[in-house]
Image (tube, rainbow, N blue to C red; front, side, top):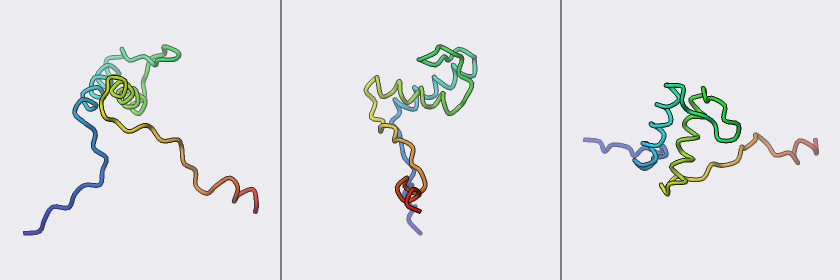
Length: 80
């Protein structure tokens, strides 16, 4: 019997999953608001980001968000 291949997908702790689930639930009910402006959140991606941010603040082991990575560097584009 072949061994099951380990998933390379990032796994978050249960505490983080609960925070994200709560944020998604609030978003669906129309109660989730963004921190800066206080506007209603309608985006699923933003709801997940808010949930992960709350998990980080509460001490869950969640990796920091990376900055946006671009295809090709700015220097190589400027040189050509």
